[in-house]
Each structure stands twice: as C-alpha cells, then as structure tokens.
Length: 333
Ligand code: PEP
Ligand code: MN
Figure 1: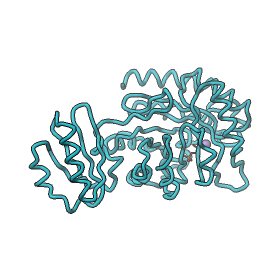
Figure 2: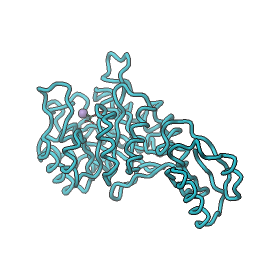
Figure 3: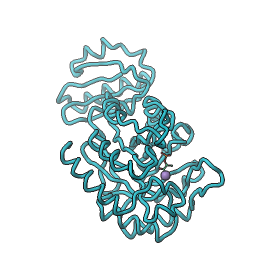
Figure 4: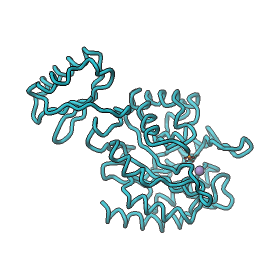
C-alpha cells in the first residue's frame, strides 16, 4: 500500500503517522520527492483501514500496490534512483559505460584494457575473478589474485571495479570492490541475495537466462528488503529460439522495467549476442531505448582470451562504439 502525502505537511505530522502505521506492525519506506512524499507500507496491510487513512487531513491519496515487489516498485519511489559509485552517478539521466574483459587474466591485460576503456569514456571497469563456467574444465578465473589485479588497474586508472561474486563465503574478499555483480546463474540464489542486503555497496543484478522481469524484480526485492537499496538491474539476454546468437536481447525489458521500478537499468549486449560484431548495433539500440548504462566486454587480444573472446571488442572497436553511444545519448536524453 502507498500513502501519498499532501505537499507541505510538517515533519512532525509525518513522524506521527509513521509511528501509528509502525505500531500496526508495518515497515515504512519513505520517499521524499521534490514535489511529494510517498510512504510505502511493507508487510501485512490487511489490517489498515484505507478509508480512515485517506480521510486524514495530511493525506492526498492511498493506493493498494498489487505487485508482489514493493521496495523496488516505482509506485513506492516515483523518482528514478541514482546509484553513486565514488564520483560516478548512474540512473535518472546519468548514463554509464562499464567495460573490460570477461575475466581478469594478468596484470598487463587488465591494466592495458582498463586504460584503453577509460580513454574511450568508460567510467567503471568490469573483469571477472570468480567465473561461473558451464564446463568444469574451463578457466574459472584467477579468484583472489584476480581481485588484486583489478585493484592495481583501479590504482592505475581511477576506474571503480565491477566484479562477480558467486559464493557468500567469498564475500570478505570483496570488501574493497566497488560494485558486486550477481551473475545470471545466481539471480535466484536467495541466500546470496539476502546476504547482499547487509553489504554497503551497490549490486549489479543480472537477469537469469530463463527468468521473467517479475522474477528479476523479486530478486532485487530480496536484496532491498534485507537492507541494501543500491541495486541496478541488468538485461543480458534470455533463452528463446535464437539459433545464431548466444541469447536474445530483450530490449523491451528496458522501457518496461523503467515503468515498473525506479532502479537503474543496464544492458549487456556482449552476453546477449555472443558475437563481437553484433555488440555495437545492440549497444546503440539499448542506448536509444533508454538504458541507464551498458556493460561491454573488451579484450586487448580477443583471439587468445581465456573466456568469451568471440564476443569481446578490441579497445579500438570499443572507442569507436563509445563515440556513437555518446552521440545517441545526446539525441535521446
Ligand atoms: C559476465 O558478466 O561475465 C557473466 C558471466 O555474465 P552472465 O552472468 O550474464 O552470464
Ligand atoms: Mn563473459
């Protein structure tokens, strides 16, 4: 249920109302917008007398929220959320390019790529240290050493780090990471999601290979309901009937999610297509479609990449694409 307050109600009156609602056993989520304050009521609202609340002088309107997701619901938080990573802002008109290799392979590789993507306009770098691989025989990342190499690249470039966490037990190693990525395969690892609620850093939550938007939002809800509201969603392609691409990029997810939630929406055209030459057109389409950012795989030597070389752009290709992306932003902003 949401309670929209009238403009200019005193803080004291708002606190009294909140105390009364909390006494009914509800959790109150407050959204202080520029023009209105919205109270989101989380919990069993069946005991709340809507007519009574609506009749209060300070209340503008009351609505039941029928969706199962509350904290990430735009009805609870009408203004788009800005996620801050150091000086970088993401969402509500702030666009971000995240780029880097699928996996961290060596100091030279990650530093070279980080410098190149920064020069091209990326403001965050990606790089997997813990890699979920379909085959147990494939390179699964440099793990703790990979995280150390990412930190060296951050020191060299100033770019904050986005990297994937697969297992709760590794969480202590991620203390110095800037954004924790939860990969498609872990989107419904509910214990992991709950644990991220206690982490004081932004989470990039990728859509599962065969998950609906509602399921993605419910997973974001797990993190937010456990205490961490800094969640970004990522559309990275889903399984359909695609035979020539790795996945199908569900671009309509971008405007649909913008309607449903206030969280920033990032698009990953690399995993969505699996083919480097398809990455630029899909990146531009996602930008035109209102994405708040892109996450793109870039490798200095894709042919010899230990993971996802076929979908990785070379630094010069990324630079070329970045120019076009920023030009499209100018038009659609
Ligand atoms: C990745 O970003 O490196 C990755 C493994 O992506 P996804 O979880 O979307 O497959
Ligand atoms: Mn990859």
